[in-house]
Amino acid sequence: MSTITAAMVKDLREKTGAGMMDCKTALTETNGDMDAAIEWLRKKGLSKAAKKSDRIAAQGLIGVMSTVKSGAVVEVNSETDFVARNPQFQEMVQKIVSLAPGVNGDVANLLAATYPGTSNTVETTVKDAIATIGENMGVRRTGALSVKEGVVADYVHNKAADGLGKIGVLVALESAGDTDTLMAFGRQVAMHVAAAKPLALTSADLDPAAVEKERAFYTEQALASGKPKDIVDKMVEGRLKKEFFQQACLLSQVFVLDGKASVEEATKAAEKEVGAPIKITGFLRYELGEGIEKKEEDFAAEVAKTVAASKGG
Image (cartoon, rainbow, N blue to C red; front, side):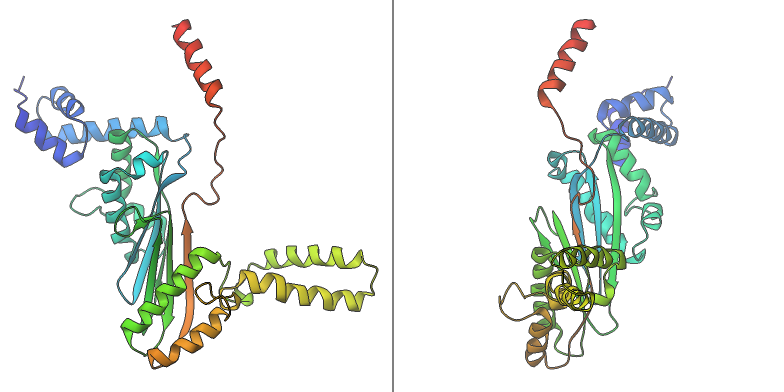
């Protein structure tokens, strides 16, 4: 049997990120064959990941990056906020988001991309991290924006590290004006998006099902008043425009940094400083864990279950 040296263990650990004892075991099991040991650890990692895959991962980080004319955002989840503060996890998210502009919002392509500095895919790297850190993790979603002329501004809320936080926003602005001034205004709009949570850019971009749901709600209320149908229809459309579209559509919302003008009006006013017309063409807003059904934990029951299990053992 080959002698397993500390240098071999260190080398394997640097290549895989696995724990020291796992690396020593892998080398022992494979008689010191480095490639076989890497494969052994990978298989072990996949096994550990499978055991943890049913555990809800609603914490983690939103990663955002912008390269002036393009930008990308990624959500990478973990089970606890403690792991989200782990420098190893943060570095992984930063490297994953660096690949995101090239996949244009396709999660499958992002998972299949080669993780920087390795020959592994992003998917394999995440599964190896599950084995090393000991929590379920996953790349949940990604999106990207770009412009031919103008900027893609970014903003991160509850910042944990460079480009990482709890909320990530991208805003695409087309303009031939001054880039620095346009970027500064774009970041203000991105901050607004983080705070105001618009659903779409304009009413034409809203989900038709969401519009119909609101229309049905307003119609039911209006009919209850006993007014004629033609009056009811006008009331409903008026409320849709004033109460729903104005609150749900970015350009119609009151600009939070101003408190008076709409975002559309604020954009028009910014054109003077930028030196050219500005058109907001799109935005992305990712909030950590939104839409994930979180399991309600009964801590007392969990403790009682653990105690009962230990007595039974």
